[in-house]
Image 1 (cartoon, protein in one colour):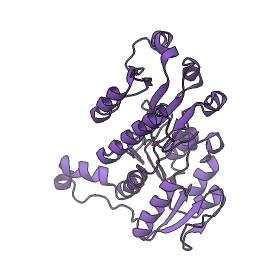
Image 2 (cartoon, protein in one colour):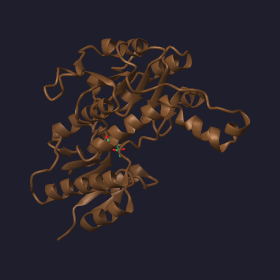
Image 3 (tube, protein in one colour):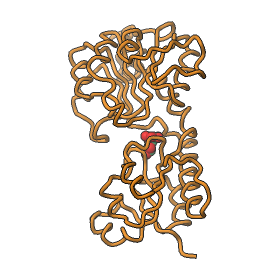
Length: 316
Ligand code: 8YV
């Protein structure tokens, strides 16, 4: 039987690449020097796209593949896939929810602890000899007993809040409505500005869409204030990055721990000049265990589609 032809948008680990190529004829968009020439040559034969959360599939790419049936995302976020173009042509879309939830939540909490306790600077203090030459490391800020806000109490937000409760933080959250699965102790605050004004740490855990673009804008940032910390493990588009940079530079916002950036991996160099940020390379789901599960789920969705079975985790 001939193998279905798929277009691959970005790299996967060897343990995913080998089984992917065993089941499909894979065209590497990411490795093609001349991407237009690749699409002109094989676009008509492509039936599936294997992509990554941050790469998605644009309207132009979808248009260049007239026989496209399915787009499978290696990631829970599908904001970079042009869903309107998919809907218009009945193209199915899948993602990889659940398997990454706890790792993403772990990294968010780890970022809060690392930045609040100054662990990056403390490590350098030991390595560069400052401990012996300059003495004691400057004192940092406590985490337990403080107030945390979770913006978006979905799967990841819930796991973040559960972890924070374990660290003895008071929890409040914003979402489109109060969630009945949330423990009574977690306060629902509908307005993100009001939420930010009541907390020390604000976690952004919203699925990104046009509706959530810049939901964390000047007002939310100002409300979080000089002592506040913003932690983003969702998508850069949820935050007005210009407003964030200005507030961090003039210290009207205390600090920020960020795993995602506009234009990543080419982030705004203004971030690099700041000492009140913790910067991570979009790797909240980046553990071997979770990435293996994401790769498996993405392939299982592709296989299900081409075998005429129900998709495991459909978005569309
Ligand atoms: C991945 C992500 O880093 O799940 C998502 O939406 O952004 C991350 O888990 C990414 O999709 C892998 O490319």
